Length: 211
Image 1 (cartoon, rainbow, N blue to C red):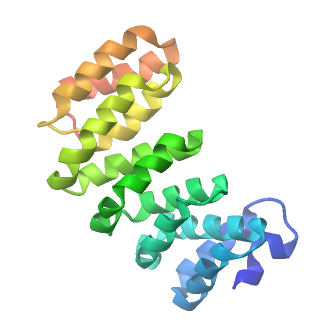
Image 2 (cartoon, rainbow, N blue to C red; image 1 turned 180 degrees about the vertical axis):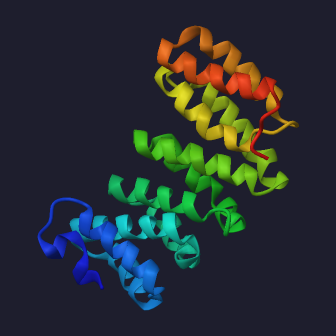
């Protein structure tokens, strides 16, 4: 199956990788998926990059097919290849509802990747933290305060988008802290960000949570 990735087809776009993910999902080809997972360790960076793309595309469609590789994705958070780090974080976001305990056990590593990673890594980390909060109260008690701290300190142009990512774990019991941060930060962001924040504030005040 790995011969169908973009690199081996001489393509410079992600089209073949997306098609391969769809094919592996349609056929439930667990052997083929294992081959793609093994490709994450390929010495050629382009091959590994294509493989992580295939895997998180599978996660978007059928997360159960890649959930058992949670440890492989967690290990990639230590990679020196930035593409692999944010790709692994993206894959973890897709499967965390199936493997919350395994992810939580590696929270320190995930936090380190969040603190040192690229913009995309940070974006995906916020989604990961929010999904982890949704997965159970015991996770929320540890992780929600980190999300609040992030919203308090992130760059103004990130507030709206990241607040939207966090909102999936906001509920009737924890919304006061979230609302407090939104009200504080909306006074110091641009108009586009302010509109996104105000939509969330409206949902909170109307009690329209996603729990």
